[in-house]
Amino acid sequence: MVSLREDRPGAHHGIAIDAHGLIGNMRTTALVSTEGVIDFMCFPRIDSPTVFGSLLHPERGGAFSITPDFEVARAKQLYLPETNVLLTRFMSAQAVCEVVDFMPVADPDDDAKAVSNCVVRIVRAIFGDMSVKMRCAPRFDYARGSHETAQVDTNTLRFTPASEASGAQAEALTLDATVPLSIDHDDAVARFDLKQGEMACFIFGAQSDVMRKTLPCEQALSETIEFWREWSRQSTYRGRYREVVMRSALLLKLLSSRATGAIVAAPTFGLPETPDGGRRWDYRYTWIRDAAFSVYALLRLGYTGEARNFKNWIAERNRQCDSDGSFSVMYAVDGEESPEEEVIPELYGSGTGPPLIGNGARDQTQLDIYGALLDAIYLYNKYGEAISYDGWRHVTRTVNFVAQNWQQADQGIWEFRNGGRPLLHSRLMCWVAMDRAIRLAQKRSLPAPFAEWNAVRDAIHGDIYAHFWNDEIQSFVQTPDSKILDASTLMMPLVRFIGPKDPRWLSTLDAIGRELGVDPLIFRYTRGDSLDGLPGEEGGFSACSFWYAEALVRAGRVDEGQLVFEKMLAYANHVGLYSEEVAISGEALGNFPQALTHLALISTAFQLDRSLDGAHPQWS
Image (cartoon, rainbow, N blue to C red; front, side, top):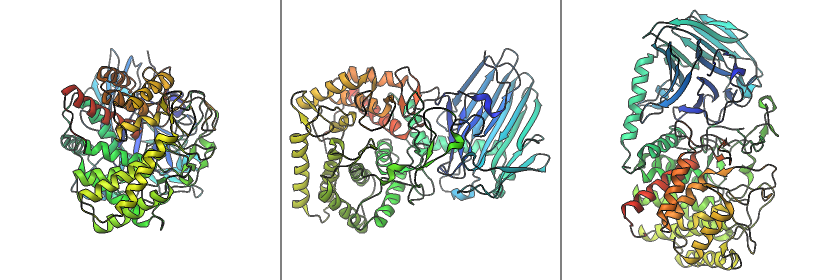
């Protein structure tokens, strides 16, 4: 029996990373635990400082809890069908209580700024009479800043950050409720009774948001449900795995910015990638690679609008990029440079290292991003709109950069922190950049230095076969003349560099499954290896497991691939969300939920449907 009587922030110490659902409004997001606690939220943007962060530090991080004051025999959490509205249910023999969590969203044709940027929490007595406890304990600026709490009226409290609270979140926040509120140690608290069929509502947002005060909770809930269901209805996917594919699509939509079109890699920072609590990176930024892959997944499902929004965002980055056509690895949501990496000791609660904000990988060279980017541009031109004259001019500049720099050593997709090296995956994606640029120019009759680009594409192709194939182990390898296997090699048939049934590929696929797999988990490279220069043994990389399943399916080993895929579906959490990694024990590791995992799921499901239906379209 689970007891939820203690409603202080520290009560949910030890909550699992994946014991959460995610809500959001394409401006920010919040994690809601199965105990009815919002224990991670950045505000007002997804890359702003936290106001709730007790998932990282139970005592200091801050939380917003709503819990019934009875012994809970069962707690269940689910999304309302085809929405991002979350329902947490607390059940006992005597009473059943529900908490509905969402962030209001507007009609697609409305100005997003005209909708309140806030969290709405509705608690209902479904069966029986009950007492309910609420505590809202914000902690400003990653728990580094203090605040004062004032009673505005019986049902409204204002949290005003002290002058030392810095960063993007500096304005006062307000909690409005349909029940009386009081103050306890600068937290908002309430204890109230609900009879069967009654409800109470709480709205948490910025004081300056004048619409928040008059927001009708039930109307906002109905409009938000309709928004998400209308968006879900636009999907063209009708395959076997519609439920998990749509949950993945809804997650990718949550991680996109309605204001800019950017797509972030994950909504969190500081969640450990190793069982000992190490490797706590910040993923709340737009990686060119991850966002471009997301466009591919959304186009698969018919969401050309999201692809267009990202195309516009990346076109602006392309226009502003360095004179040589190179991009940064990542950007803030608004397109500005992502911040420098910084330790946050205030949220250091356990593990071998404190969480970090910002990301040091921003200064790395990762040549693979250009292949992902050009592939996304090519696909959008194929399924969306033709590229503009100015757009092609900027793309040409970037392709020429790749042509001149593809032989450089770099840190690659895995963002090695111990120096650059020649990497197969980076070479592969440079080949993709050249190949897609050539294809696009030919299909759209665009001007291009075809002889030069073809020569570079051919040179990369030859380099991969000459230096990244190991005849002794019959496998493609991570670095020239080595025996190091790398799961990113699984992209080779997925990007159509090599035939999925080519003998060299089939032996590579077997080697990856044998050496990097722990059924069905696929590790990025040899477990326990120090290739990245970092301590700790990470888990299986969830996206790699889906890439492996898709590679098996494309190789004609459909039964094997489907089994790997189905087993990976079992690693989703209770509402269908995936962490970045999974320990052999099944524990979720890393930032949660992660876009890359969900887009890999979509791609694999799409390919499985084709293969199981016997539909094999020609390459184009």
